Image (cartoon, rainbow, N blue to C red):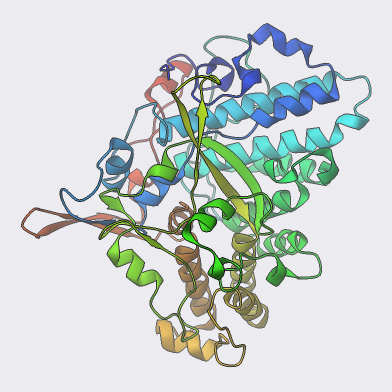
Length: 486
C-alpha cells in the first residue's frame, strides 16, 4: 500500500488498500454516474474498509499481557496496548481507519451529488437514504474514536472531525474540525433524513447495506451516546417489530452449541445469521491474529466462563491455541488474490458492525437509565435466555435482588447498567465494542506489562487521559487541521 500525504478526504486516497473498483478509476469518470445502477454500485464503496477492532480491543480492558516471548508482538497490537500513537498507514491502525472512513464518505458524497442532478429522483431515493446513513455512520465512528466523547447537557465544544458533505474538487482542501456538537448535529440530520428512505428491496444482499434494521440499530447506538433514551428505545424497538428479539439473537445455547470449531468460524459472519444487521468487508489481518502477546488470554477467558448474575455460566465457545492463547471463534479470513493466477493478495475480515444483540442490550440500558426497571429486566432475561446452557426461566431469571447481591450495588438503576455493561464486555470480546462503553462511562483501564522474571509494571488510562482519543494522521496538518493534544 502506498502512503498518502496530501489530504484527509478520500477522493485523494485512491491508493488506500482495499478500495473497491470504482475508487480505482480516475476522478473525471465520476461524472458518468447517470443511472440508478451506477449509483447503487458506487455505494458499495460507502462503507469503511478499514478495521477498528485491533486498536480498540487492544486498548480496552478486554485484553491482557501473556508475558514476554509469548505470542506475536506486531506494532498494530503492541502500540494500542501501551496507548501509543501509531502513524503507520498499514491495515488495522487508526490512520488506516481514518483514511477508510473518509474514502467511504467520498463515495457517499459522490452518490448524493449524482442523485441531486437526476431529473427524476424517485428511483434513487433508497440509495439516497443509504448514502446519508453511510455518511453519518462513518462520521460517527470518526468522532467517536478521534474526538472527545459527547456529554449530554454540556457545550461539547471540543474539536470534532471534518464533516464532509460534498466531493473534493482540489488536491489539498482546507478543512475545519468543527466541534463535537456540530458533528453530532450533522450526523443526526443525515440519520433522520436518510432512515425513512431506506428500502430492503433495493439490494440483492441487504445486510451488506444500510437496510432498515441496520439503520434503526445505528440510530439506537447514536442516541445512546447522546443519552436520548426515548429515542434509543424507539429505534431499538423498530429493529424487532413485535418485540421478537429472542428469535433474532445469536443462538449460543442452541444452534451454536452444536457447531464444530470450523462451523463457528464459518457462520458467525454469515449474512444468513438473523442477528447480523450490517456486515462490512475490511482489509484486515484481524482474523489471523490468533496468538498475540497482548490479547485474549487465560485471565480473560476465565472471566468469560465464570458464573454470572444468573447463577450459571455462559454457553460461549473459545478455542485453545496453546496456553495462554484463546479465540472466540468469530473470525474467518477471506484471502483475495491480486489476480486469478496470482499467489499473492490481501487478507479480508468480514465484520458484523451492527447486530440485534447489541441493539437489545442498548435498549435495556435505555430502559434502566430512564427508570423503567421492569422492561430493562425483561430485555436482560431475553438476552440471557439465548446465552445460558440449559436455560430455565425459573432458575436463571435475573432479578434486582440477584443483581444487588452479585455486583454489590444496591441502587437498581446502577445495578441494571452494571449488568448491561458486564454482559456487553463478554458478548463482544474480540469485537472491539468494549471501547465504546469505556468512552461513554469514562471507565479507567489498567494494563499490566510483565517482565521475564514474572514481575510487572502497571499502566493506567484514567478517565480524562488525552490518549483516549486516537491520534489523527500527521498529514492532516496539510489541510489546516490540528492533531489531538498529547
